[in-house]
Image (tube, rainbow, N blue to C red; front, side):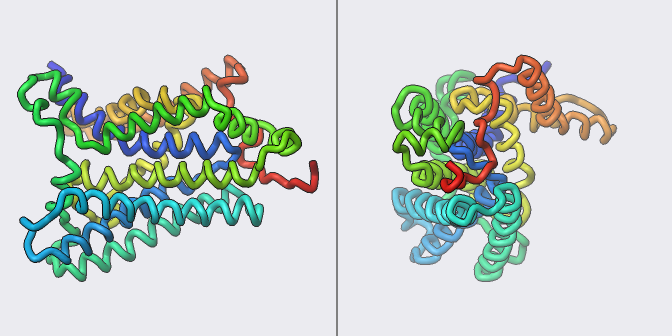
Length: 331
């Protein structure tokens, strides 16, 4: 029988980085910026947190002297700062200098992966590890702590109460982002900037400010996805190029959720489940079948894209000015 009690928690754990990335990218795209640099930003968010955790652990006289608050706050702040800088670079190039958004995003992805691998490799050498990875077990334990009642409530606790605080934070951020976009004046202005910046500018809305704030906030949220992957999912283990294609899956998830962060909460769990489905469905030694199962998230995204295009409802379409630089002189 299919073991749902074991499968669902693993699907949630796999889906949390995607939820962070898709929530951040949704906020960015609502402002009209298409940031294909999300994979690189998540990578930088991860390595920035690792750098903060590494130097904090190195400063301790012994692993037992670790302070749980500092062990969480230092990597968390480091991750936010690193991903914020990536967002600022993207905004400066695309909003201020009006560079091509597609090229800039892809360049940021390449830069982010190279940045992470360079500093990750340097930290591995500094640690003196004989293996090609860096272990931050003491810090990871502070991130992985879950509610104590989770172990004593059976299947309910395993499915709903067995995660670290970053998993619940991802859900809260997604719901808050959805509320802001749909029910606040700030969200209305942001959507107006993404749909028609000329009209928004004429109405007195500062287009550049909204683009900067939305993109930088989205980058910081996405960076937390990278931090979660290393500190929670990977139990504090950093290895170069181990992040996989999760950044690209997060971008695909934005299309799947039709630019709605609240829908992304469940959709990310679905994507996480599809991502590991090949591990739970028996396929014997047939590697071709396993590869077909690995295609499931992308196939589902393509099907959803086709269906939403056929329905042709305006609310299911991306922002009208997505990926297009705004030239105020042409207003």
